[in-house]
Each structure stands twice: as C-alpha cells, then as structure tokens.
Length: 321
Image 1 (cartoon, rainbow, N blue to C red):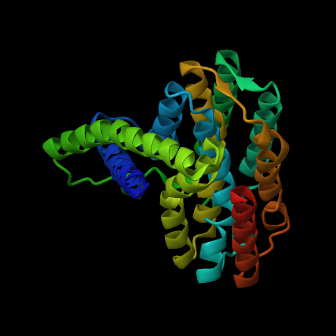
Image 2 (cartoon, rainbow, N blue to C red; image 1 turned 90 degrees about the vertical axis):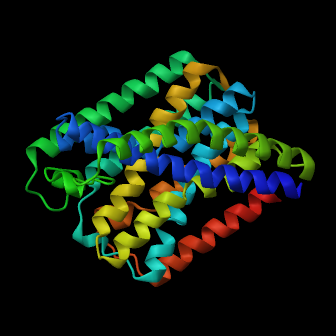
C-alpha cells in the first residue's frame, strides 16, 4: 500500500502543478489573442483552476469508480467551507463584514439544492448533466452581467479584471514559447496526474477495506482543495476577505455544476447510498453555516475558525469510522 500512497501523492502534485501551468498558459495566450481580461477571468481562470477535479471525475467515471468522482466534489465543497475558510480565520481572521457576497452565496445554496435534488434520482445521467450545465450558464451569465455593471465596485473581485495583471496567472512579460510550454505541460500533466491519483486511490480503498466514496471524500477531496486553501490563506493575510469568501463560493458552485455536469456526459455516475443519507447534507449544512457571515456581517475570527476546523475534523472521523 505504501507504493499506492506514493503514487497518489505523486499524482496529486502533478495535478496541482499541471493545473497551475495550464492556467498560466491559457490566460496569457487569451490575452495575447485580444480576449478581454474580464472574459478571461470569468471563464478561463475558473475552468483552469478546476481542471484537476474535472479530470479526476472523468477518469473515475471511465474506471467505474463513481464514489471517487462524487466524493471529490462533495468532499471538496465541505472542505472549502470548514477547512479552507477555517484555517485562514485562525491565522489572521476574516472581516466578512467588509464584503458583499450575498448574491453569489444565494446562487451557491441554490446550486447545492439543485445538485442534491438531482442526486436523489440515484444516478447522474447525461440529461442531469445538461441541467447542471444550463445552471452553470446562468451563473456565468449573471456574473458577467454583474461585473460589467459594477466595475467600480471594489468589493467585487472579478470587477477588477480590467487590468490584465490582476488576473491569476497573467504575466505581460511572458514569451510565446513559454506560453506554449505551459500549455503543453498542463495538457500532458493533467491526465497523467489524474490517472495516477484515481488508480492509486482505488487500490488504497481496496487494501484498507473502505469504500471508494470514503477515499474521494477524504484523500482526494482534501488534496484537490489545497489550491483554494493557499489562495484563501494569502487573501486573509492581505486582509482581502472578499477574495477569500468569493474564492470558496465560486469554487463550490463550479464543482457542483461544471465538474459533475461534464463528467455525467461521459458516462452515468451512480450516487452511493451513504452519500444520500449523510455527506450531501453535511455539505449543505456547512454552506448554510456561512449565512450569518454573509448576511449579518459577522467577522470570522480565531474562535470561529477553530470551530470550523474542529467540525471538519469530526466529519472526517465519522466518515472514516
């Protein structure tokens, strides 16, 4: 099993590095081709940063391991709220009263409810995927419309994308060959990393006698949440609570609507029974916990951060046992 753990860690590292390379290459190529910075921020960055999760889901579906595909999404969303926001709150606190994420938060809750409702069909098929992707289209359309009409609102992170240097991965000095290298590394590394991680995760699950869903909810989910954690910690240190909270809300919506939506077009994704009875509701409850911070302007200090991390630790223990 030690070799499988090594392969899983190697696959995760390759995924994270390849995803970062793909974002840098795609962003800078798009800006070179004259695509508006706002469009790049709303689409390419969002898709690129979620590419590792998407490749994992597609690979898991092709390998008939739906527990890993759905466990990664559901587990990542839970980790994004309790862990990715909890740790930065412990480090430096989050002044959520300084940002307005009410609109996107309501859309995240709606996406969660839609996802759970479709999950109770017992399987995600191609037409469930089309529904999720249609909802994603509405979300992106609304984000584009809002950003276009509120470019001067400093609380809206995407509205600041008029300056290309503000976009994640943008580098005005990067050369053409380097852009091509980033794209090649990303396109080669993503499927390679996904293949290593999924295969190793399946083997680990079999060897320790737990379900693939458990591995997806824990090992894979935590691993693929590391980029969001790094971004959120830096945002908290820089006192950018809007970036931290917006990063989590946007990532959660994209996980539910895009990743499962696209993966279900590749093949049907059966929903594990234990997920219907427990994990989906934990994901929704974790999202609802953010309501006082979003609507009432509560600040997320060290005590709240500690509580969030403790809740996540308790959840992991319950999943593993």
